[in-house]
Image (cartoon, rainbow, N blue to C red; front, side, top):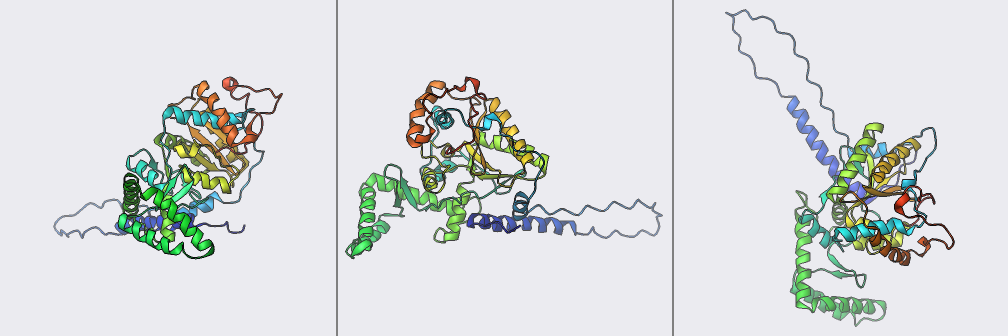
Length: 405
């Protein structure tokens, strides 16, 4: 089988995790080689021979991230075909899938991170929990590789523009002076400098606004300097990628519990870690994804920005594995704990309801026009019969998803 295409995020995680696991293994093996102190001989006492102690078992080296990836991507098959249960299909009214998740986000009052600066703030407030790259039952698979973000820029949601962050007013003034010189140059160079200078001036001319941006710069760089024991140089492109992947490896606690349950059952059944391909996203990251992925949604309350959604990659799963995972998720959905969908981008999308039940139907209905505005093809065809969520499974027999998350 040809080697699968690699990406910077995966290589970065592999190196970091391999170093940590190797160190832990070396320490364990070293400890096992220590010899007991010599026993003094006593010629006057005849000692009864003691049974030979059983040898200590040789410690088994923990599975590396790379080895776990190889197991995920191993070519395999199984008899039978893929059977998608109604719970993981779309509603007849395709708008409902997103509307349900948006309604839940509104009812729960989730704060959505615009950019990495806000994501840092949420992590510092312990609103999100980290999912290590290699868990006991899961592995993060291509997290944060669909788009790139600059952690040292603020994202303005209203204009969909990035605003460069500076440590202080002196640094901003120096940049402004350089842009003033550059905008005098002819052609695209001058026009680009002029446009950037106007954007920066719009934010940094306001004393209160610029103090917020200075604080955002400090928060991001402080976390990059000491991110739970690891340091990232944000002037290094590779470290920027590492930092982004790390920030996007978080999720809300309620969704984490759902993920761990499915992962445990899958790992126990098949001996492979569950490949998780997406967790929390910033709104900027989500909008960048819309350009690159036909499955990414452009609605304002996108499920992944809430931190309550995660994706499971089924790209390499055999039919029996896919059916097993879908059965597990379908049971959770029947209990009203999740909203799920088998997507055409090789992933199962799972959204966890924080309080264990679906949102009020009136709130859901209110979001249907928003979904339709973002995805006109999601509107039901005229003359079609449309079933409500009262018969949840009966109303989800219209096939697989198009845009959904």
